[in-house]
Image 1: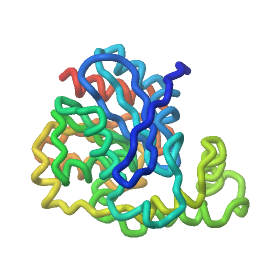
Image 2: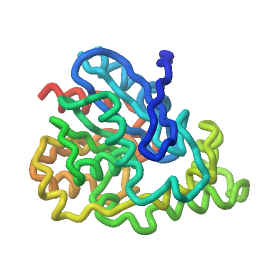
Image 3: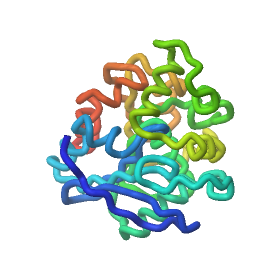
Length: 251
C-alpha cells in the first residue's frame, strides 16, 4: 500500500479534520464509509492510485470521529448534517470549483446531503448506497449502535462480531462514533429529483444494507447504475469499484 501523507484543515466549529491527496488534475473528492477511513476505503485496495493514474487529483477526507480527524466526545460537535458541513468546509479550504464528488456508504449519504444543500460538482458518485438509506435514515445506525455499546459480547462469525473486529483494526473511538450516528438527515425523493448532474450509483450485487441501489439510480434524473461483485463490506475491496468509477468518469 502506498503511503499518502495526512494534511489538516479546521472545521467551522474548530475541530481539526484530516485529508489525504494523491495525483494531479481535476479534483475528485471521495468520502469513506462509517467505521472506516480514507486510507482503508480508497488507498489500501488501489482505488485512489487507479484514479490518480487516470489524471485526477484524488482528495480523501477522514470524517469527523474517524481516522486522523478530531474525535470530540461533546454532543455539541455532532449536530444534524455536520458531516455535510465538514464537506463544504473542505471544498472552501481547497478552493474547489470544478470537481467531482463521491463516497461509499456513509460517504455516499454525505455526498447526497451536500448535493441537496447546493454543492455543484460536475459529476457525483454514490457507492454502497440504496434509496432507503438516503430517504429514511431512522434506525439505520441501530446495528452499529449495538456493536459500539456492547463490546466483546458477540458470537464469533456474526455480523456484529465482524463489525467489532473491523472497528478494532482501525482503532475506532466508540464514543465519537456513537455521536456520528446522531447526525444523519433524510433526503426526500423530491430533493433527489432536482439533482440533474450525471450520477453513478454503484453497489455490490449482494449489497442490501441500504435498500435498492437500482431504485436510487432511478430516482435521480441522470442516475446510472453499475453492479459489481460482493456485498456491502466486500465490494469496496474489489478492483471493479475503481473500474466502474473510471468507466463513468471517462464515459
